[in-house]
Image (tube, rainbow, N blue to C red; front, top):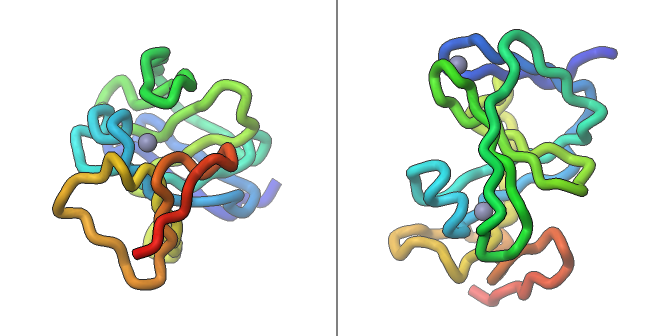
Length: 146
Ligand SMILES: [Zn+2]
Ligand SMILES: [Zn+2]
């Protein structure tokens, strides 16, 4: 397989390559993303599981079954430096890769924002972005008018 994307954690113990194009990408402003990142929101690029190959150290995982939206989420990170490589959502055939770990992150455009109703006060959205009140992936997200 020819790799199109690559990435790594801060210390370099975990690296990965991806052989396909992103399925979707977005910034998520939900409480879970805020607390697991220790920041205001998380930005993910989703790739097919079958396109992803992890090398080096295996990922450490924390499975959380107490999320607001009811879906269990598995946070995945480097056990040495703590970089959050991404998340796994059981029963999804895609992996959410944290944009900050991708070598090609400066070339990726993010248009969609989900979980606006939990976004922090200071967060603003670019004029051409799409903003959804809650989750968008399951089709129940309500698009808000800015
Ligand atoms: Zn690391
Ligand atoms: Zn989230």
